[in-house]
Length: 160
Image 1 (cartoon, rainbow, N blue to C red):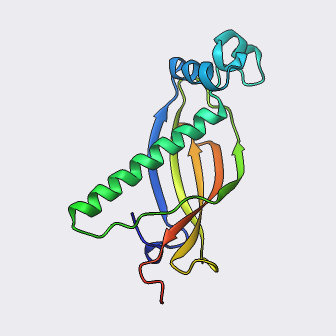
Image 2: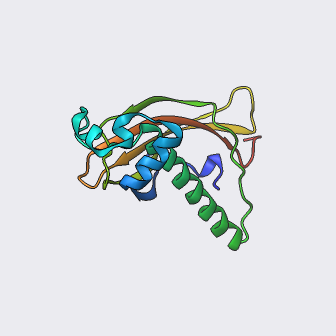
């Protein structure tokens, strides 16, 4: 993982993509969001979604899975180069969560993360706070998911 000083506003990170199959949509929904339009094709067709729709929470959970996997790859690459790894802190939260278009069975969503803002923490000089706009775009180029997250990122040299 990178340090606060390595980050730049506008920095883009592709996280990967995921195809939402009917089976995966139903499995997630049966455990976490058992609404008819997530569980049954006919109910989905009759809904305002027009088809079997993935839960928004499923779409967000896939973002988390891909974000963690990307961070693990980045950490492994840095360790292989013998670089000291930065251990990022917790997220103080997120805002502006939007499910902009339905994700239907068969859709493939590509996820990305863009650095939105950077600031030094006033109360913890060893940390910076980074805001990141996270998005999901379907195979037609339509934005389907977006939110703005904050995360504590360690500073390489807090005395600077």
